[in-house]
Image (spheres, one colour):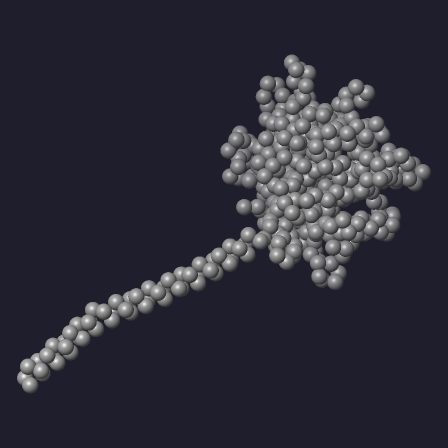
Length: 420
């Protein structure tokens, strides 16, 4: 009996030892299994988030203001030894921004009419060498606005030749067309997002009450090839714009961009006509309005359609991108300033939903410096961190330009920020 009791006690003690060492391990094992399941759950969430992110397709569109090749720039970019021109240095410091965007639009203010019958010249009748188009292409510009108040600076022959040169260089052209059978707009498939792009320019009243550019009568031959508007015929022009918007949508455009040539020269605010046109375009579903002509910056705004269902970003003026209009020449510092404006467009590939983000921008400034008895003009980012290549006087001037530009561009909307 005593021996049996001892055996029972030893058995109980053995069970105690087993519980002491094994049960905690069971708990640990159970905890590890739970942790493993938890990790698997988190992994599934992360995987789902990554999958959802992968289904968002994003593109970025950039735009600049006026490219004006004045006489002073022509003289500097000419190489007498080779009897040729090279404009690449004028855009070398902004090439990275232009070429990295998925699509870049710019305004050629003037013509490429050739030297044989016309000669190269600046203001008031612009005619630049074909090498300018080479430099624009090299810098990353994809689309050229060819409709502005200088489109007929070298008459009809210059108009046609300019288009030919741009087409030969591989640019898409907005604002004008080769024949009446062509569309007035282009639609670009950018990484699977279809973007409709069109431009219009103001016209003036020439002799006889007809439409004109810089006082030059627009002939019946080329008038149908141009997208134009005039303040005294806005209702008719609005109807034409609306028809083109509807055509772009019918052709599959998921985003609509207008590039306008409008406004009052050297003014820092949009005028009533600009605001009226912008509101009309917003009411008809236009997503972004880029604009040029004033040769000075004007604010970026985000406006709503009258029904409150649609937002449109409007850049009232992107200023001069490249020109010799500097304080030293025309006593106006605002003509030295420009911007590169960026707009990101997101498409949910699962739902087809399009989201157009608010614009961001990089201020630019036209630097000049003397070398080999010439004055060189170069577009530079007007950001303080990017001023290392400027001489001391340029560094102070670029800071002034930055402050001017930021003060103007962001004055209408708190949604507009400098690009990171």
